[in-house]
Every structure is written in structure tokens, then in C-alpha cells.
Length: 576
Image 1 (cartoon, rainbow, N blue to C red):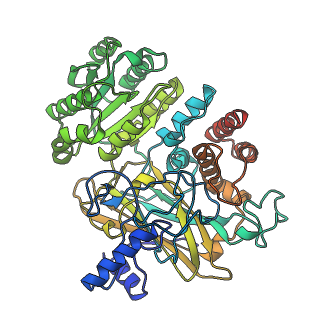
Image 2 (cartoon, rainbow, N blue to C red; image 1 turned 90 degrees about the vertical axis):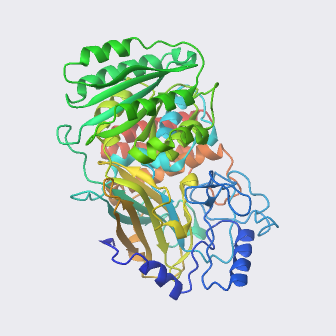
Image 3 (cartoon, helix red, strand yellow; image 1 turned 180 degrees about the vertical axis):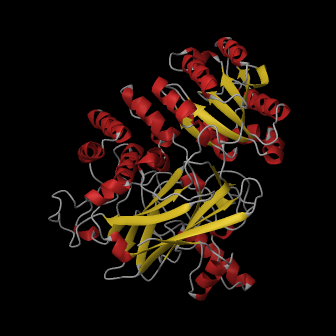
């Protein structure tokens, strides 16, 4: 059962948690040692409610000497979880530094007791991880597990989701789910293969949180765009499917943009230069095509110089009332100049903050600097995608362009509050480097995700319901800032146990998009673990079973993206 409504009081949810004795930040399947240190500090300070920072990666330093990202939450040591089997302890509860022994990629561990029933993360609409995995599998090799991000696999199928959309700016919140096995843990009569986990997993469910913005407007109705394209012309871009694909894409896009749109071109190799200053399309399309045709591969990759020059060009050509955005097209194989994402972003910090210019990263090439591009877009208030052929490029630059230009929400975050009366354990699948400290959910100074019209965001949880429990399971809240006024808004959705009892592989879940979400999550896990189940038992479905599931779903929905997913899983299966 799904209900929606706005929060009227900013701190009401937090006060309610305090009254019920729920301590934000404790008991997520994280580090028990750190939780003991936090409790000790709270007792010493006589503070009533404990706050434990959620694990994530990256940025400014914390008090314990660790590194933080997205609002000061601590970096994870393990960035791979087999999804979505139950957690099995892999060693002692913790060590002196709060890290469980045996805490390796792909392994799961359980903190006890599970006192934290909050999950908070920044929204993400990146899809590059799935696009790059498809490319590498087409070439007969498996992707590096470190490049596999489950949320990007899941969100690659946003258009397959049957979410309601709002009439205006903001989000709708849809919360649903399904049982991953028959009620008694057997295979069940409805489907001979319906038992994913087995008898001991009869209480496990998938819970999906779906967020959707309004449909993208027609090209004639959106605000004008001022786009600065920063184009990698280094030697590595000479490979077929790189610079040639970029030139072709820009040429087609030039014909699709409106007369009142404007573009600028910046190229970079060992140095960066402005090929074309901000130019209104109008009668200048021939001039723009000529500038595109001059792009030729040359020397090394000074990506830092390219981004810096790109933002300077964007500021010089800033247009009031237009959506100003930098679009980086590169294989992100930086090998000269500044190569650290944070240092590059520091150079353009003023342009980003003062003018609100966001960064959209488009990756190309069989060898691709996934980590650098992803971090640049993440910290640059943007998102990433990956193109491997002309069809991908046409989809990104022509069909998806309005979503990649306009914004409907800034610094968007989600927080899911699980009910301890009905939920025993839960785990968010993916979003490892998007997690936000629970107490920072309503701190609007903390970075979130930038979302445009026509987008959907899906978060998938593995949830174990307490045996025999009924009633409220979870409340999901999304918070965002108006792109123009920076006024905060919130929207919520709720779900009860009865809404989680349907079969995962039923026709109902096929229509809603939940099945493709589950298949994408399972597939990402299989690639991420690279055949290593990480000690979790029982195991998720085999790749062969996922091929069968995806093939049946593609036939039932007549969906081309799902058919491509089935073919991609089959390639991975053939590689063993």
C-alpha cells in the first residue's frame, strides 16, 4: 500500500524517532566498533540520542582521521555486496578500529544489535556503469568489478518503471515490493522457479523506493540552453568509437537544438583551447559544424586543463534565464597535468557555486577512466552516462537532451525509515558512495543530487521482515531544493507488510518494472563479485536463470532495453 503526502514539520520525524528510542546511524550493517566509540562519546557528553555517521567514500577529513564524502559520512572499506541474500557473519563482531575481520570485497557482515533503522543517500541518475559493462561484454571480456555500481544498472531502466509523475516540479514517491520466495520457503505453486532464497529466507523481501519527476517538456517549452562542450582530442581518442562518435553526435545535436540555444566548444589534449566561444545557433549552424569538423586527435590527456577552460568559457558566455551546463566528452584517461578529481573541481568551485553551472559527463572508449569521470560528475553537481555506438549517442544527445539540460531539483536526498516492530534487517543495494549521514538529511548545506525533468530514481532494498509481523514497514522521504529559489521541499510515501507479499516473478511485478529492477540488481552483483559469492548463503540466482528471467520479461513487455539486458547477461554467462 503506497501513500504520499508532504512533511509539514522539518524535525517531526526526528523527534518521533527519539521518542521511540530509535538511534539514527546505529545498526546499519556497518561497523560495530565505531558505534561503540560513538556511544562512549555520547555518554561522556551527556547527549540523549546517539548519532553515528553513515559509511561512504571520499572528501574532507573527519575527527578520527578518516576521509568523508557527501556530508561527512565515512568511507566504506567494502564496496561490493552480493545482492540480495541474507547476511552471514564473516568473522568477529569487530576490531579495535571498528572494522570487522574478513571485511573484504563481496563479503557481508552483520552488526548486532541492529538498532539503526534509517538509510540516507543522495539521489543518483548516473547510468555509465551499465553502459560500460555492456561495451566490455560485447568485446568478449568482463568489466572490472570496481566499475560495477548496482544503482547505475538499476537506473538504466528508468523508463521501464511504472511510477506516477507529479504535475509540477518536485517528486512523487512510490514504495512497493515483493516476496523473494514462497511463504513457506518452498518453490511455490505459482512458479516452479519462484523460490530465490529457499526455506531459511522465507521472510526476505525486495522493497523498492521509486522517485519520479514530471515528464520532460517539448523542446520548444523548456528554457533556452547554453551548453559548453569540453571535448577530449588526446591521442587515445583516435580509436574508432571515440572522437569520431563525438563529432557525429555533436553534428546531429546541432540540428536538433533550438535557434535560441547557444553552444561553445573547448578541446583539450596536452593543453586546452576554446575552439568556439558561446554562439547562438540561429543562423550559425554552419559555423558550428565547421568548428566540430576541426576536432582531430593529437597528444596526451590534460583533462584538468580542459575542465578548467570549459568552465571559464561557460562563465564568459553565461546567459541569464538559460540553463548553463558544461558537457564533458572523454575517455577520462587523464595522464598529464592535474589528474585528481577533487583538485580539478577546486579550480572551478567558484563558477559552480556562484553561477550554478552543472557538469554532465559522457564517457566513450573501450578503455575508460570510469572512476575519474564518475567522481567529477558526482562532485560537480551532475551525472554521467556512457555511449558506445551511434544509437547510444543519438539517444543521449537527441532524445535525452532536455533531461540533461534542465533541472527540477537541486541537492536531492532520500531517507528511508524502517519500522523496528516489523523489520529485522535491511540493506540498500548500491549507492555506496552516495550515502549521507542520517543527521545531515535536512542540512541543506550538504550536497545531494541534481535531477532533471523526465527522470526516475530507484533504490532497491533487501529487507527481512520479522516472522509473523504485520503493519507499517517503512516511510520514504525525498528532500530537495527548488533550482531557482533554493527553498526546500519534501514528499513522502509509506508501505505496509501486506504490500510486500506478492510474488517477485508475477505478471503484476513485470508490469510495474520491479522485475527488471531485481534482474538488474542481481546481474550487477554477479559481475561485481566476479564469481565470488563472498560467503553469503544461499546464493542469488545463477546467471543462466537471470537470462531466462530477462528473456521472458522482454517477450512479455516487448521492451528493447530489456531485450538488450537479456543479451548482455547471456554474454556474461558465455564468458563463464
